[in-house]
Amino acid sequence: MNNELASQLTTFVDMFDTGKLVLLLICLFALWLANWCVRYSMVKLMARFPARRFTIMQLGTLLSFSLYILGGAGVVVGVLQPPQEFLLAIGGSAAVAMGFALKDIAASLVSGLILLFDRPFHVGDRVTFDGVYGEIITITLRTVRLQTLDDNIVTIPNSRFITDVVASGNLGAMDMMVVTDFHLALDADIKEAEDIVRQVIVTSRFAYLKKPVAFAIEEVQIAERLAIRLRAKAYVLDVTYEKPFQSDITTRASVLFRERGVRRPGH
Image (tube, rainbow, N blue to C red; front, side, top):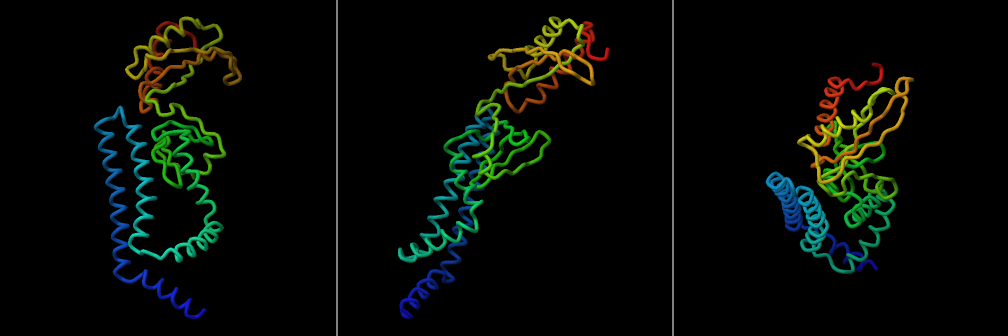
C-alpha cells in the first residue's frame, strides 16, 4: 500500500515539473490571447457590416465558448499528460467536492449551454428581465451581460434565465416594435390626433415601414382626471434607434397637436 501511494505521489509530482508548468502557463495565455483576437475581430466585422452584427455577435460567442471549453481541456491534458487512472481518480473526487462547493456556478454553466442551444434570446436583443430592460451584449458560460438604456451593465447568472420569465423585443431581428403613448383630453379630436401621429411615424427616418402602424385607444386616469390614451405601435428599422425614434415622433407630434388645436389633458 505504501509503495502504491508513493508511486502515485511521484506521478503527481512529475506532472507539475517546472518545464510543464511554464508550458501550461504559456498555453493558457495563448488561449486567452486567441479569445481576445476573436472578440477583436468580431468588433471590426460588426463595424464593417453593421447590418449583420447580430449574426457576428452570435458567431463570436460560439467561438469563445469553444475556445475555452475545448482549448482549456486540450491544453491541460496535452501538457500535463496525466495517466488514465489518475484522471479517473481525480475526476471522481473533484466532481464530488466541486459539486458541493460550486453548485451555483455549475448550475449557471449548465444553464449557459442550454441558453446556447435553446436560444430564448440572442446577443443584440432588447430584453426585459426582472424589471430591467436593455440590450444583451455578451453571453458567457456563467453569466449574461445586459446593457441598459442608461448605459449600465447588468450581470445576471445564466441559471436565472432557466426559471424566470424573460421577454425579447426582437428575437434576433433588426427591427422591433416600439410602443409610444400620447394623452389627449376627453373632448379632443381623436381622429385628427391619430392622423397626426401616423403622419409623423411614416415620415420618420427611423421607421420600418414594411410592417404596419397600429393604434389602441382607451380612457385612462392621469392626475385624478380622465383622459384618452392614444397608443401608437410602430416598428423601428434598427433596435439601436429605439429611443431616437420615440423621441422623434413624440416631439413632432406634440408640435402638430398645438398647431392643429388637438386638446391635451389639463388644457
